[in-house]
Image 1 (cartoon, rainbow over the protein chains, first blue to last red):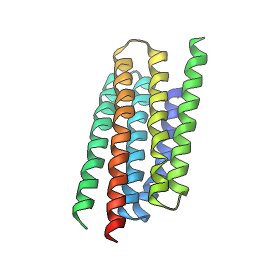
Image 2 (image 1 turned 60 degrees about the vertical axis):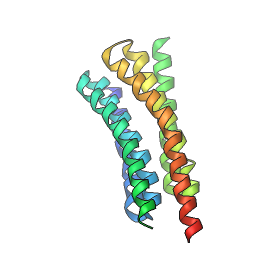
Image 3 (image 1 turned 90 degrees about the vertical axis):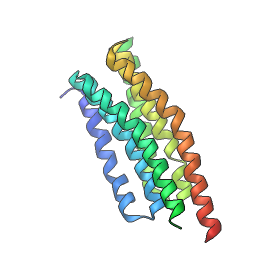
Length: 83
Length: 93
């Protein structure tokens, strides 16, 4: 395992408490945690691509980066409409 | 020299990601948590820059540029939308 893979593992570990917040707290606070977790997941995929030298993971990182932000906006729209 | 830059960017990115995670977990209020989404995007951009410096102008490096730029541009928009939603929720309460 090289340094990039260790860094990606660290980011994945950081996502665990965020998922705890998403589960345990109120929905809008959960969306905040999911937003940060999505960012970390996208960067972790990019580091995985560099660590394994496979470009496909970088494509996944880019797709997750876009869809994560759009998904957060959709969640917010849904939560505003669910009042 | 390049290795030093890669290490510096990677450490800065990791530290910012850790700060962001700790802030979101430890803060008590929704708006307080929201302040800590910024360091995550900045940390992600630092890590993407580290990948770019390490790999150069490769296909992965190009994706790193796109991802870093995407995070820096979209994170403030999403943060503002979240703050707006929290504010409206409080007004209705």
